[in-house]
Length: 563
Image 1 (spheres, helix red, strand yellow):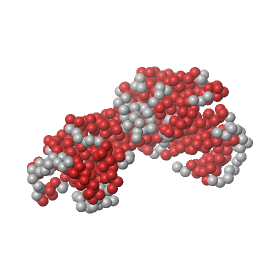
Image 2 (cartoon, rainbow, N blue to C red; image 1 turned 90 degrees about the vertical axis):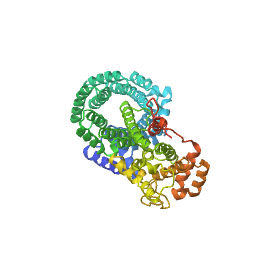
Image 3 (cartoon, one colour; image 1 turned 180 degrees about the vertical axis):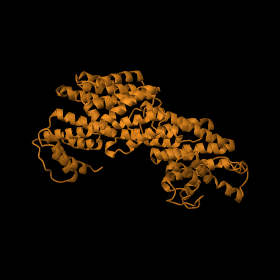
Image 4 (cartoon, rainbow, N blue to C red; image 1 turned 90 degrees about the horizontal axis):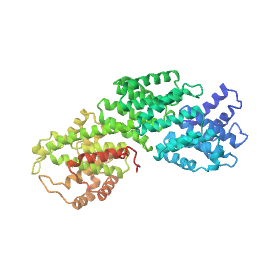
């Protein structure tokens, strides 16, 4: 995105197609100001007062918001709030500008910035509130409701009720009721959500409604979400027909990207994957300036749903981990997302249990060993500040790092004496065997890398490829050091376990021949903070802890605070 070029084009277009009359003058002032601000060159135009310029910035930011150019809208509102502290700007304009900036920050998913302005506007002086015109008071309460629901976890109905008390405008009433309907949906009160959104859809045909496509479209999206949750696919199909007709008649109505998301989910449910992929493609082709963090996240959720239906469970879970990196700022998880996460996690747990059962039948030590290595590796990865996506790869790869041993003869795995060279050569094949097996199961490449390379060493003396320092991914190094630690501290048929102190003394001397220094230090720190003994009976508990932790989920379906 190159904002300065966008503002330059908009300035030229506005001058070309419209006379520079009173209605356009504020926009021209604002675009000229933004362009000069970004390229550090003198302005071409001059306002009569600072308030006139702030008014122009407000209008321009709002215009971009209405046309789904949220990045530009946010940028303009930043410039506006930087000016409104000047005493020559009326207090009502100051409130409007700050409120708009709160909402552009909200749309961009900037939680800290949104909350900063939310707190300021929430404690607005009552006398100042009374001086605001009715439309501004409505917007204030309606917007506070939206922010409180998603960023503070409070009940937004307190604000929505005040919003309705401060309007007699049909369009504003309709929009507040859409927000209320969506709140009922999020609370799984599907009956209330459906009834309210149907009433709003009827109201959208009134001549008194401004921007009826936007009102009707949002009402239809809410209905579609409800029908998908309740499994009412016939009713959903009827809503889809109306929503697609609306998009055809008004191709640029405001929330069309959100419509694409739920149209895609509908077509997945009716097994029309081709059309679902079409809507996902439309989302993928949108420009960065037209995508908020929320839409980015929801697009990944739709992609995950498609992968899930294609039995690509791990790729689907990977997309969900990425989605939560976009959606993690929000306090509430919508029902469709919560259910998809829950279903996928159940599927992944079932796959893991089957694989662990295979290992347990072959070698009980290896089954427990992989579970312990996964727990320790996850703790080390968190200590190193890995992204959620890398933590996902790490946890899964650690869990499966020794899976190739299912094809190693039991007589070799459990031999109560030192292995011969020929036997050790067979053992050394397990990383390649495991990686090949997981490739056939369509596991992500990053997971296969861990399985293939967890016996590589920083000094180049590992196997199977003899990789050395700088060639071994960090997630692989983490599993490597945790694997060595657990192997040495566990009894084996051919030797007794060493004490934790003995192993740590050895690793402090030899650790950097195995992994790089920062990985060893994080490993050492993780070992000091926790115990990692476990049993196979704890398998599901361990994995729910790891996988749900990736999504910051609490038992009530809300996001837990991320750290």
